[in-house]
Every structure is written in C-alpha cells, then in structure tokens.
Length: 125
Image (cartoon, rainbow, N blue to C red):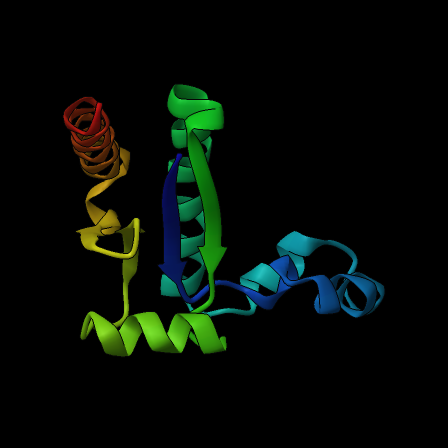
C-alpha cells in the first residue's frame, strides 16, 4: 500500500470541528468558501480533483489523506521537505510532487512507487 499525503492550505469548512458551527452561521458551504482568498478556494478544487482521480485509478492500493500545513503533521512535512505554500503530494514520506501541476504528476509518482515496491518484493523472495 502506498501512502499519499496531499498537503495544502484548505478552507476550514472541511475540518470536522468547523462543520458543526460553520453551516449554522452561513447558509451553505459555498458562502463560507467565497470568504476565503481565491488561492485557498482554488487549492480546495485542485486537491478534491486529485483525490477523486487517485481513488478512481488506484483505489485500495493507496492510503490517501489530506493534510493541513497548519496541523502538527503538516508543519512537520513542510519543514522536513522545505516546501513553500502550494499544493503538494508526499509519496510514502519520501518523494514530493508539485500537485499544482495536476493529478497526472501525482499519478506518475504513485506508479513509480508501486513499481519500486514490486521490485523490492521480488528481490526479497
């Protein structure tokens, strides 16, 4: 199984804590999202599209998560890989892909990791 962490600053509407409060303040999620800077809303769209494509192509072969760079895990990933703001995919904690280039770049990195894992498994037998 390949671990993929999608790392990007996203609207808090997608956090569990906000769901209970935000919708009661706003009529809809779209209203809340419209209050964020354009870049944050665009990141949300990119991450959502990449997530759907990865699940569609690789399904159960992935352990996929979305990580906020303001969380402890996200801050650690940002520092460890010296990443600026943006949309990033961290593959098995090793390879970093600029996910702002789209899902194809991330899918290629996942395919490389799967091929590498298969080679490692074949060599160990």
